[in-house]
Length: 247
Image (cartoon, rainbow, N blue to C red; front, side):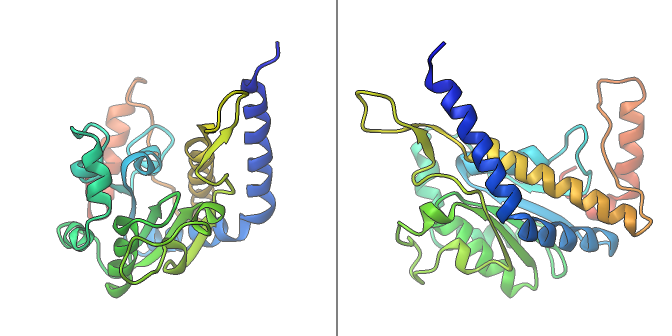
């Protein structure tokens, strides 16, 4: 069967190989910082606006994930907002990211992972700026190809990649979409979600490896749908209560 679907799969494979060969050092540094924060009793957070929140949700409260990963998911940025175009307006609103952080439990010594594909919008930019002022280590997942071809929407002129302590490139295409079909002038099939989910799961694996090297049993969720899962997870909630901020 001839279909662009298979070209898309090939393209995803090519991007993943670029991640393997070009982004490992950044992924490793991000994971190492998170592991040490967890070991020292600090907290780890993740944030993204609109579709970028998918990565925060991928890491958060799920089977095989770390119980101590906290997602920042303000309702105004989520895709169940109506009208959904409001999420774009909120993502460009200056001042709100500072309010979000000040009303969270994030503090000095914690780690914040920020996801923005274009890296140009105020939400992620100001989140990085404010977190840095608070003594929080920041990591970005972004698309450097995309970011390099757009201007910042923040008055500083900065983009997310200019502000974070470590930057992970998702190695995607400009505008994120990847497949151009005959008779069209707009590409389809974004890659940032599937690639981004792969990156954050690499980060989680590497965190677990570092914790094991430190002699710490990683606080990993069991499925709530297996016998004993709820009871096991409840023990994690109790043990790591000071590092869990979503209950």
